[in-house]
Length: 146
Image (cartoon, rainbow, N blue to C red; front, top):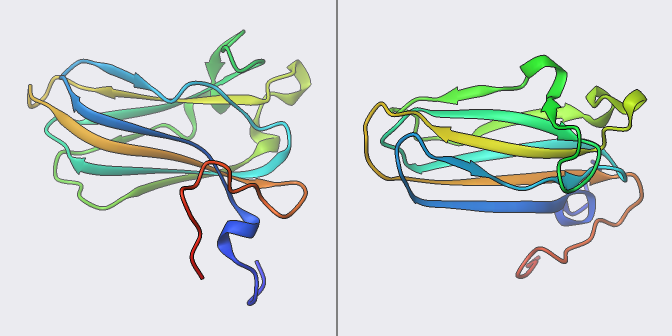
């Protein structure tokens, strides 16, 4: 990223999922998004009000409907967000970490609220991608202000 480049020119919001009053032991998924035209991925999880440990798993598939779903790089990017965590967690990887030999080019972020606190959880999951060709699309953003 150069000094004069805008973040929104180089990174594209691919998906955002808002977990609102998610019950203990419940699973929330972003849904599969295609990374076919992207080289880097950043997943940001904002624990807004977490009462249960959040187990975050990255799954890959061969289509946006999740065909052939499997763990990304044997779970190497999976994390847990503790109840005491109040700051965002960031997961970064390059798309060459996908099983591209077998045609995997889509990901899903799965968040499971473990039954540790037993009450509602609020969190946000954002998936950002750096496209192969700039500028990035701003379709999924409400606005961009300089």
